[in-house]
Image (cartoon, rainbow, N blue to C red):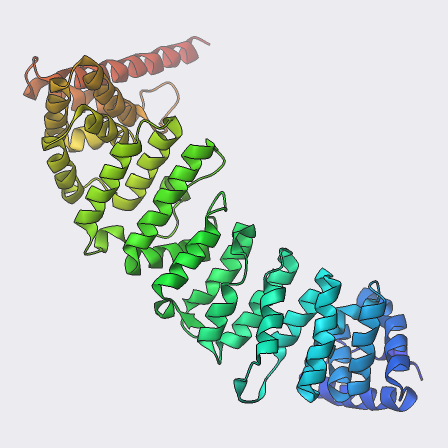
Length: 458
């Protein structure tokens, strides 16, 4: 019998493929009634199958055979424990699922032997078994749970990936258990692992975010702390939902990350996804606690601002992430802060404003004038830093235009600065800022014109 031809072509129609599988499995069972002999034969032809046929042919065949033969499942599991390099070990999860379905207690005995090896391949086989297992009445014994907790605590990314798939399966019928098991996973291993895990809470058909308790959110935040960069759409979506439904917890989480970055002075650790790193917006401003949260964050910044430059920079990134845009509502809060500010407050507000958009000093001129008036009252050093912060925000960013001609942005800056200088007193503290911006714009315009003249002379 040319059994090496027993491959299911991807081109076959499903009905024809199923019919072919029935015939083939019957032939194989007739030729190899002993489970180990059948397993050994299949191992000898696996290489040929995998090299010459696409479409998961080996899994189609082996899966069908194991589901029809407890003896083959037994042989596959037993061999996996003896021979770690066996090619049939890739089907150990299917075999274990079959054994647990047929005799759950016996299957658990085999699973315990798998976990004792501490081999990633066999740990992954355990959770793959649970990802396809359909327990009667959805009853998980304490032995099941102990086994799953043990496997899910693995540090191996491949094991965790398979574990998350098992949790997805459990979530379809037992959401509280799925949440409990996901809390056993060390999602802090990497942003990739965390993103895969937290996707579960962004699908109401699996687990709605609203099912998570205060304690659940705390647990996941704690696990996310070690991740240097919170990249990943599902991580960002999880954090966004937390900012809406667990505002104080989310704020505390990000403040803790800023303090961690400052204490370690690690510039590779990004506490929050600000500016260009932000893909899913937060909802801190929509919270009923917005006003108190603003005061809380402001006070926190004031108490810790002199820790080091890392804290100054990172805390301002967080402030802008939480409360931007700098519209009338936010400026109203900042203005109230300015009215009762100390020199330290002015320094903090200056740092926050240094991250504002380049047109801010022109669009919010009245606010800028009041702010610099207040800064001037606290001495030359404080005033100079305030002017410098606003100046830096205005000249920041890329410029584009035609080579040899002034950039439109420079022309706009010159014109707006001139307009401001005409409308405010020369003795006003803000006069200095707009004068500096006018000079900067004119210098850039003249440079562009000189470059244009040089092109014409060539």
